Every structure is written in structure tokens, then in C-alpha cells.
Length: 129
Image 1 (cartoon, helix red, strand yellow):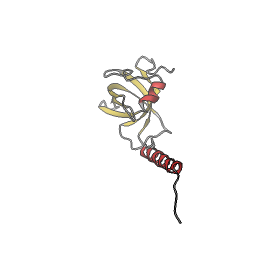
Image 2 (tube, rainbow, N blue to C red):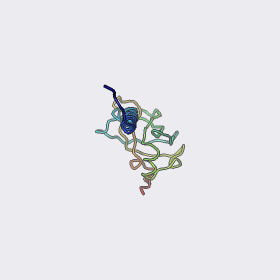
Image 3 (cartoon, helix red, strand yellow):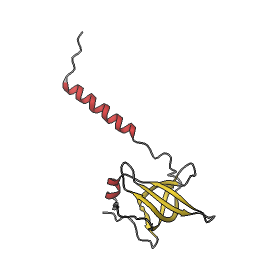
Image 4 (cartoon, rainbow, N blue to C red):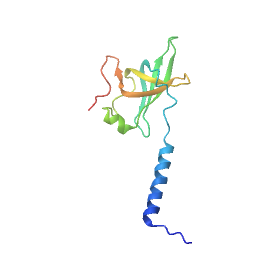
């Protein structure tokens, strides 16, 4: 018996394989504790508005007075833009407070949402459209 593949079947199969690969390549946010958000305050050290996820490095002074860098992961730039944030929304030296989802490990880091970040004076960083 000869197997005959129609071009549409081949194309549909290729699309399915490509979509499956892209979906499995994207990592989850399971490392962050979404159940117990915390508020932190600090000074922006660096803000990287890059794909696939933005990165915010915040210098946070602990209860012991020691300043540590907290690495915060955000959504993709396109998502942040839709929420009113741009590559110029944060710059080194900006003092902010943010409600974040900390790392389950307890290390200095977590994930952030644009609408949960405010400047020291209470002004929102993101201006929703």
C-alpha cells in the first residue's frame, strides 16, 4: 500500500510541530510565589526593556542595613507597552516601591507587574491606556 501525503496535510503537520516547539520553549513563572506578594522599596540600578522578558535590577536596603541587588523579571516589552510602560519609564537612580511576587527560594528576586510599581512619591510608573 502506498502512502500519499497531500500538501495540505504536510503543511498542517509542519504548523503543528512549529507551534508545539514554541509553546514548550517558553518557561513558566512557577518559580515565583504568586500567593504571597511582598512590597519592596529601592533604587533602580538597571532596567532592561528586552525580549523575551524585561528585567529590573533594584537595589534594596534590608532590615540589617545591607543593600542587595534584587533581580525582578517582567513581561515582554509588548505587554508592558500595552500597560503603559516604555523603555524610558525607569532609569538608574529612580526610587520606587513595588509589590512583587518573590522567588519561592527566598533569594533576592521575583516578578513584577507594571501597574504594581510606583515612584517614591506615589506616582504610578505605568500609565494604562
